[in-house]
Length: 425
Image (cartoon, rainbow, N blue to C red; front, top):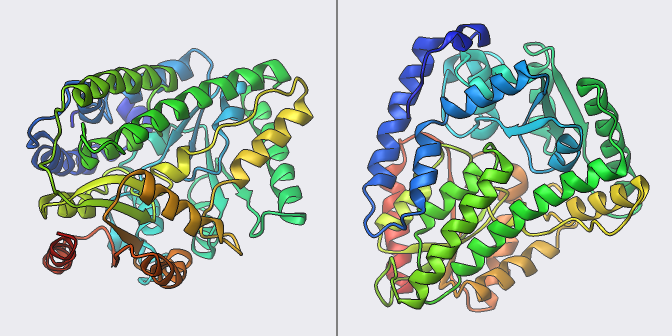
C-alpha cells in the first residue's frame, strides 16, 4: 500500500508519520495474506492495485473532484443510501473502521468494553490517519446500535461536519414512516451540501448506478456457489470491501470483467480448491478494510469461504431498488422498501435473517456456518445463540466466534477453526 505525498496530504491535516506507519503494516499484511495465494484469477490484479493505492490514487481522485466542485460524503453503514448521494452529484465513500489504532487515546473517550468497529472509527479520527475521513465534506453516522449512537455524540465534538441519521428498530408502521422521513431529511441535507436539486430523473440515475454495482456483486456471489470454485473467499472479500470506496462505474466494470474470467475458469474446471474442501458460510458482523483476520485463519485451516452473510457481503448487496416509478415520492418509497429489506440485527423481530442464512447456505453448498461477532457487539451476539440452535436443527454445523481486531487470540482462533474444519471433513 503506497502513498504519493502531494501537497493535498498536508491540506487534509493527516498525521503523515502515523499514516505511513499504518500503511506499512497493512501493506505487509496484505502481501502475506493475499499476494501469497496461488492460482488467483488475473482479474484480481485490478483489486490488488486498488488496495495498493487505497490511500493514493483514489484519494487524489476525490480531492480533484472536490476542486471541480463536487462533494465527498463519508459513511459508516450500508443504511446510508448512495442513490441519493449520487443523484446530487456527490461521491459517497466508506470510512475506515477495520483496524486497531490509537486505542489508548480512544479509551479516554469510550469504555474499554466497546465494540472494536466503533473504537476503530474513533481511533482513526483521533490519530488523523484516514484520508477518506479527513477529506469528507459530510460524515454520516447512523443510529443503529446503542454503542454507535453514543459514540457519535463523542465524534460530533471532534468533527463539525457530522450528520446523524436515525434508524428504526422495527420495519413496519411507524418504523417505515421513520425511515422515509430520515431519507427525505437526508435528501434535503445532501441538496444543501451540494447546491444541487434532486429530481426524479437524477434519482433514477443514481438508482441505476447502484443497482448495476449490486448486480455485479450478485453475479460474483452466484459464481462462488459453483462446485468448481473459481475464486477464494479472501479474494471475494476484497471485492466486497472495495465496493464501498471505489468509483462505482469503474468498480462495476472491473467486477463484471472478473466474473467473465471466473465463468471461463468454471467451464475449464479451474478451481482454487481440491475436491472435498469444506465450504464455509461466514455470518454476522461486517469485515471492513483491513479486517482480514478470521477469513485468513479459515482459509489457512483447510477450508474455503463461499459466502458472507454480512453488511460487507450478501446482506449489503442482496436487494435492488425498484426504479419503475416516475415521481419522487414513488422512488423514495422504493428506496425505503429496499433498505428495510436489510436484515440487520438492530431490528426486532428479525426472523427473516435465519431464513436468509439457510437459503444462502443451500445455494452456496456450504458444509457449515461460522457466526462471526465482534466483542461487545450485543445485537449480533444476542442473535447468535438462537441462530445456532435453529441452524443445527436443520443439520448445518455452526461455530460461534467472538473476537476483535487484535492478534492476541490468533492461537485460540486457529485451534477452534481447525477443529471445526476437521469436524466438517
